[in-house]
Length: 444
Image (cartoon, rainbow, N blue to C red; front, side, top):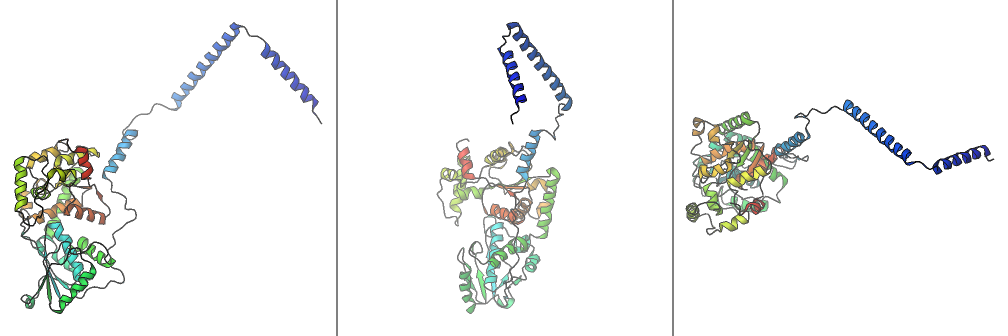
């Protein structure tokens, strides 16, 4: 059925609307409509604006709530916070297949060569080699003829008893060769660098004719890769657990860290590798005087075990093979966001050029600290003439720092960075020297 009543009503409404639209409005009426519409719009705007002010009062800007401060806080966290571990953790425990070496009547004596960190890694390798060759390890002799001319013994630098007892389940270690074996013929060997486990298994044939094998050099004697898992873990136990520094070094090192914390809370440890021997060895003379460059050349020429004598300093620098200068370090740290007030502990030997070179870094970061400023003369007297013991103090302070920054990827830089990863991926910033030089070369 059709609703005629509704249909009729719709026709009437359409007609009425048509009649209204078709009626012509006068200009005065149109103007009045526009004025009223405009006035109504103003009224609505003012009314709503009043409500906005009443409901949302102007915010009081504080340090805590300002967006820029939150950004700066985030940036500060990025400068100091350690990177994520991604679930990684130290793993040094032996597997169920691991068997300790007996080492009853076969002895391995070792001459550990190089500076502190070269000796540390070499000794940890020799622990692994003694295990592979089923030998008793005699406490290594330390290098006294290197550039540093350090007369320190093993027990001067390391906690000897801790070393022996920590590794007693891995390798038998004794302080000295038994008296009855001191005069017997020894097999003196320069083991091949980066050798595999198979190489040392072959070397075990030396036991057929000798009871004592003397190793003339300890550095880089064992390969880094393709070794059984238990051998790698043994190296880590030796390096990070057994080779603890002697009690006097540990004690003063911790005091230095505490004094730094009291000053600022957070600090950067900068391994500023800008000593005379490093510049002479690398042939890097950028920014030096002609007299200084000549002095380094003569030193390189007179150091017999440095095989490369003629070095082009410019090529070294452009190739990124030179340690960053103090000024370049200052520019780098400033560029990545550290403020001038940052406390920086400088872990290094004597800086070549002295205060004149250091002033270039201090112009960016005046809050520089050396162990000589943190410790008293009496505290340092015990270590003053022993470069390796002094370097051990720098090692401890660098290891415990909030951020570690090496200016050159030498033995200490790699050792500290690796140890910091082992302890929980502590923050290390290693400048890309090649890229840095590309940006800065020609600026000085």
